[in-house]
Image 1 (cartoon, rainbow, N blue to C red):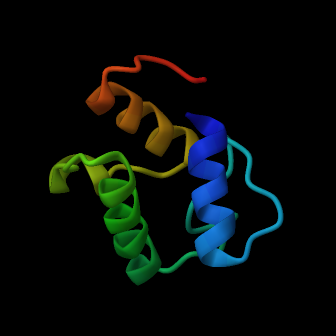
Image 2: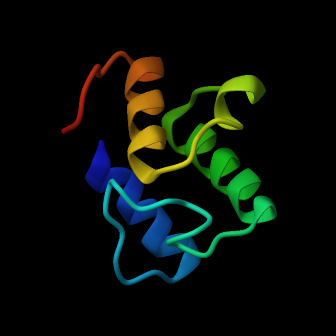
Image 3: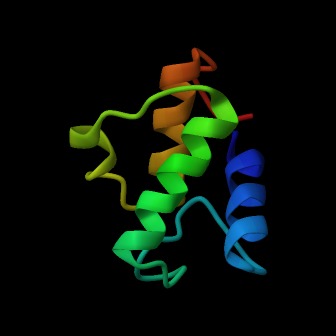
Length: 78
């Protein structure tokens, strides 16, 4: 899961380095608009719907990976 999310971030935001512990806004430099766009990209890629209350609490790349794993039933990092 970590590698897939990292690949999406790199592809859509022209990033060279993405690690699970990196903060989406602080370390990756994404804006609130970028985060909303990322949510749409993830939803479309995995065919899931993220709950607004939950995605507002996503701070790190790992948070996104864990939440997507939970929703897709993959229950962990791959």
